[in-house]
Amino acid sequence: MLLAVSTVACSGEGSGIVTCGMSADAASLKAVLDSSGSCPECFFSEVSKIAPACPDDPAVGMLGFYASLRTDRQDEAVRFYRGVARSPALTSEVHADAGFTLREMGRDTAALEAYEASLRRHADPFIRLDAAMLLKEMGKQDAAVEAFRAVMAETRQAKRDAQPGVIGVEVAHDEAAFALAEVFVEQGDVASAGELYEGILKSSPGNERALVARRKLDGDQPQ
Image 1 (cartoon, helix red, strand yellow):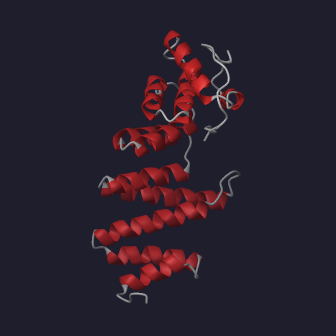
Image 2 (cartoon, rainbow, N blue to C red):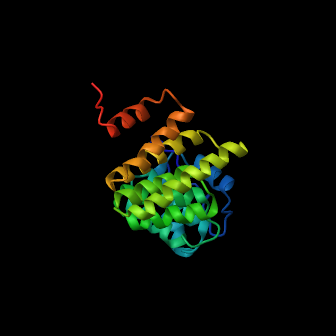
């Protein structure tokens, strides 16, 4: 996430670092955000004044999105995001952060759309896991099952490939497996749930969470 919240008091009116047509690459945006960290309110004001002159500018839109989040203006953040959401310049990270924000606001359908946009740019199993969890919460069980299975497949492949930069894929895999098992239990498919717990225990025999879940399926409640 590019967002870095600062608590330093505002001491000036604008830095002049935000302009229409500026570079929209992630490194450039991070540099601007880092340099503006001492005065979140001033930075939000600066971006807000520039934005009307170039409403479709992806860099200004992304900076407006993060400037709004820094100052606890979620509605403004969503407005900035929606203004540039279709731009090919937006990174998977920005779409994912928009998904997190929209989910916190209870805008589930919009959050899913942002997650999907993020995943089209980069197949991150943790983003897919969050999207799958949201589908489950929304009662879209079939879509959730498919998404949880996709997370498990991606994390297994990532582990086999030892992809650089992929951290903790086992965590995403197991969280998806536990959530998928819960869906199966709700659907009355106890056998499939048990297979998932057994799969976790095969790779991690001491996994207490899986052991407890397995005992519950067998009717052996823990003391």
